[in-house]
Amino acid sequence: MKLKTLFLLLSLLFIVFNCSNNIDYSEAFKNETSGSYLYHYDDLIEVYYENNTLFLNWRGGKIKPVALDTNEFFVADMYKKFRFVQHPETKERYLSAISEENENQITYDYLKVPEGYKTPSAHLKEGNYDKALAGYLEIKKQDSTSIFINEREFNSMGYQHIRKHEYAKAIEILKINAALHPESANVYDSLGEAYLLHGDSLQAYTNYKKTLEINSQNRRAKEFVNAYIADSNE
Image 1 (tube, rainbow, N blue to C red):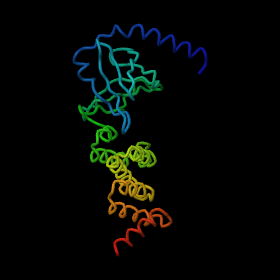
Image 2 (image 1 turned 120 degrees about the vertical axis):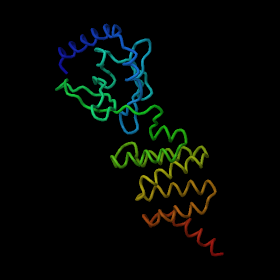
Image 3 (image 1 turned 180 degrees about the vertical axis):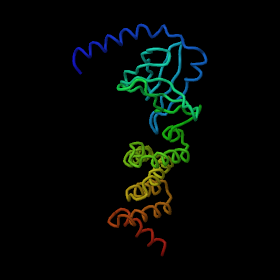
Image 4 (image 1 turned 30 degrees about the vertical axis):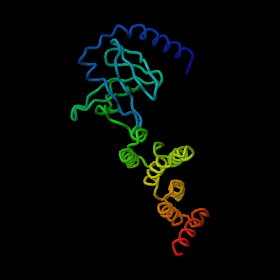
């Protein structure tokens, strides 16, 4: 960015920042726009007001946007301008990112979700594993390469619980990973290990066997499956 352009931008932000506290939001407007907006599949923007000042909560940080007018604000952390809009047909509310090329264009970018809505990761954190899985499967349906369903990340979470001897939690997380990545030998290997440490040799055998069906060269799985069959035949 050229120095002159940067200077003009900073000057503009200084002016609007000093004017932003003069905006008087009506109670109706605040009620209509307050709430959570779905920024990404597993990421919410919370909009709220304190003493007639607009705030956002995004990724754990409290953000005070620069209010440009009643229904337009700039978020430096995202380097984006936004406005609140309502879809004329569905009547659903959105945060609309304002295009630099065409500021009059209305887009419906970030849907306002119902009160109490939770992302898959929020369900996972609270131990609502079935709801978490349902959410992650929906993400996979929309984008099978999404970073929110990364196999290694789930595997790492599972092993974090294993290291803490929280085997039941590890199993639930690794079960989600297996459901999301059923063609991976590694997810069943990890799940088999978690079951084994938890003392469930039958489920360990079942998952190690699935590992071998995908990767017959997995030594640990092969040794356990052979030992389990030998013990069963005695």
